Image (cartoon, rainbow, N blue to C red; front, side, top):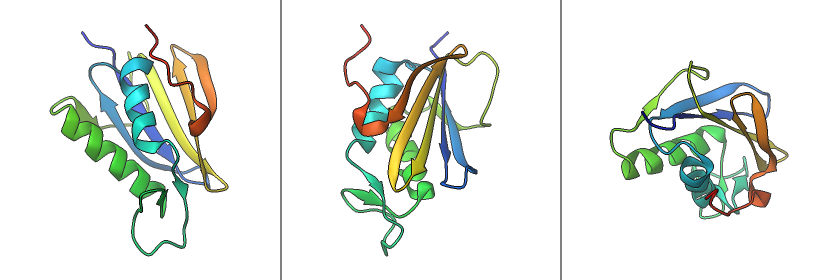
Length: 127
C-alpha cells in the first residue's frame, strides 16, 4: 500500500479543471514538495500568448497540465487522471487561483493541515 493523494485544480470561477491521483508518496514530503517545487513563485497572467513562461501560466489548464506531466514523468506509472474525489485517499491537494495567485489547501482524513498561498507553504519535509 502507498500513501495515496489526489491533486485537484480549480479555476477562478470555482470549476474543476483537472484532477489526478498519485499512488505512492502522496504525503507532504512527497507530493506536497513536488507540487511546491514546480509552482513556487509562479502565478496566472491571462494575457500571455503562450501557455506558460518561466514565472507565469496563462490559465489553470496550463498549470494542471504542467504539474501532471512533470510528476507523471518523474514517477512513471504512479499517476493517473482521476475523479476529484475517491475513497481511501490519504491526502488531498486543492490548487486554486485567486487574483492571479496560486492558493493550496492540503487535507488529510478530513483535517486541513495547510491552507494559503502556495508561495507561503512551509517547505520543510514532514520527517
